[in-house]
Amino acid sequence: MIYILHIAILVAIYSILAMSLDVLVGHSGLLSLTQGAFFGIGAYASAQATVIYHLPFIMSLMVGMIAAWFFSVVLALFTARLKGDFYFIATFAFQLLISYAFVDLTRITGGPLGIVDIRPYAFFWMSAVSQLDFAVMAGLCAVIVALVIRRITAGPLGRALHCIREDDVISSGYGKNVFLLRLRAMAVSAVSAAIAGVLYAHYVTFIDPSSFTFSESVLVLAMVVIGGSGSVWGPVVGASTLILLPELLRFVGLSSSTASMLRQIMYGSALIGLMLWRSQGLIGKYDFRGDDRV
Amino acid sequence: MPSVLLTGEALQGALAQQLAQFLANGISAGSVYAIVGVGFGISYSVCKYFQFTQAALIALGAYMAWSCFHLAGLPMIVALVVAIGFTGCVGAGLQYFFYNTLVSRHSSRLVILLASLGAYIVLQNLISLLFGDEFLTLAKRDASVPLIVSSARITSVQLLIFVTNLLVCCGGILLLKFTAYGRFCRAAADNGELAREYGVPVTQVHLGVSFVTSCVFAVAGILIGFDRGMGPTMGFDPLLMGVAAGIVGGIGNVLGTVSAALLMGLVEVFGVWRLPTQWQHGLVFAIVAVVVFLRPNGLFVKSSSIREL
Image (tube, rainbow over the protein chains, first blue to last red):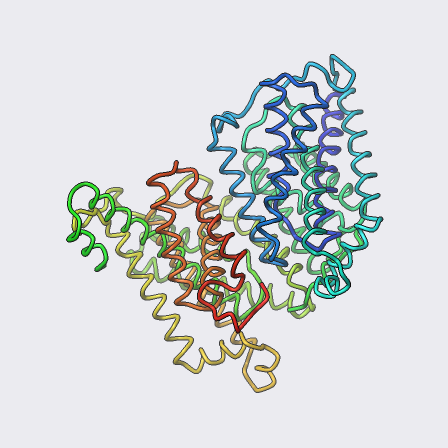
């Protein structure tokens, strides 16, 4: 039962991450490798708020979201003039920088040892949290994030983002401020990813830099692409698939390092296969073909 | 390296020694980025899409050289030639079977980018599976004899890196400017469809370019293997810095890329002089970000020939 709840919580957390990335990938046409970084920024900021300042959970959630928002604005400023593959490379550099910072800024992040014993003295209104409570709250958070993101992407901001996705020059000709709209999309995405990070930090009660690396970003990107981008359910399906499949592999009985390599090879092959035959993913709507053909 | 000599003559004492040492380290770091940047620049300007697999090719070159030399026991020169040739063939094979298929399906750049990311993950993990994750080094003895040039210790590997950089840079310029093949490359880079109409064999040009640039990536990987040692993800940082050098110097502009890469190497090394080591990469990225923000087409490109990034 504990194991099933554990998987459910992971699926909820990664669904939030995948949905947050879909705001950029599916709705704005910006391939981005930053989700691991924002996941980590949310986790670290809230962990420090909890461990050092003993803030209640709600407050440390706020701290994590504000930290992610700040970094997303900085990133948006520096990538304002990039698009397509160069935007992707810039986000890749951002992810590497943040990963280095997690390891090297030992005074803030605890370095390679990470932060241990992250226990809020109040989790929402509950003082003691069982795993079931946490699973329910994580699920609720995922639903709320899904509703908010659906509300945003189906509304005027979403329509404007779709317009930019198809052609940014024409959109700016129609009076859309491409930079501001992209900044808002990136902020929504980063803040949602930070929510996942806060949940993660308070669930495992221990964080270190290895959870927020480049491969984490690739994993989340693979979830969105495999599940399908531009829809609400696509990222959820992708997250569930990529969390459940490796858990099934666990029962086959391979050594853990070989298993992780095989898992990576699986993700990679899935990416290649989908891009060759079905670029909108399993149940997605956007197929990445709005961009110019080669 | 005349600049090292000059500084040595002009200044004396510990400061001069430190300065000369930094200069040597910076130039050798920058030279690696330059080699990767030239390879990336030629490939990107001709093919027009970013190939993540290039990071895997860097690692593949180093690992092939390692296995030819340490496992098969071939002499070093033969091992290097075999490794470079093999990597070139793998690169051309990827182009023929993988990227050409994607292009023939009218994929957009983003689709190709994602597929190449997938291919990179597969290749990198195959290397991990075959060779393991532990750190290896190509060098036979761990202490190579340093040359003392005006009080700076320059290892023979650093010298080798610098000389190779010069060779790759000159080779690239000569190939692009003065051969028929280079003319085809530039035509395909300017306008692929028009070049095809005029009878340039664009598909073969792409194949040839990927073979040559893959060889260049293998060379870079081998040099890194000699200098700092190797792991399956070793291609990552150099490719990123090479791409940054390409962007700053102007993509496809060999001289610009090389100067940008050397500049970045120097910034990286001199930054550490005053700042803590962890900001080494951060400083370089910050400068690249500012350059991209102010001049998205690169420092050494005339602003009249605007291209979209």
